Length: 190
Image 1 (tube, one colour):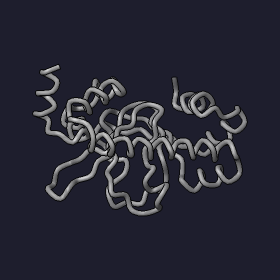
Image 2 (cartoon, helix red, strand yellow):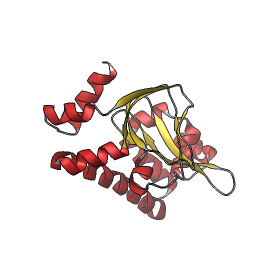
Image 3 (tube, rainbow, N blue to C red):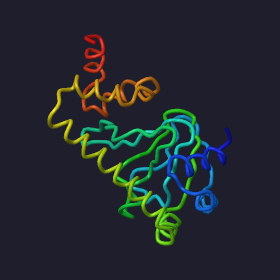
């Protein structure tokens, strides 16, 4: 499936936009191809766009005070990256990098805001996406405070089998807040 068809399918089936609204939205996107290991967003940059992953896998991460990379989240096909600058219009505290060769559909945040102000359907879908992203972060915070590492991994693996299969163990471990060796131990015990 080519990028244009993938985008159109996403807009109509995943976002439930009617064909006319989906076509209007699709015209505002451009397509980007990245090699594995490319940085889509650099920490400290103000991103002027959001990107829908059409093919591939990306992660957002930051570097803590000890110089350790901490994975904040992953995005695979039909998932978005770049919410932070959309919501805050401030420099990103995160890097966003590709973990595989990746194709994205990129739209300027200013275009999203114009679309949302002119279309109730688009406004509702943007709100749903932002709420989903917020709830995901909120759930992760709750899980860190209330669940053991083994339980966090089991839940993550059940909800994200593709990411477990496709991402490096070190990235999954940093997402879960454990060391790669602890993750190896947990997997051996299972």
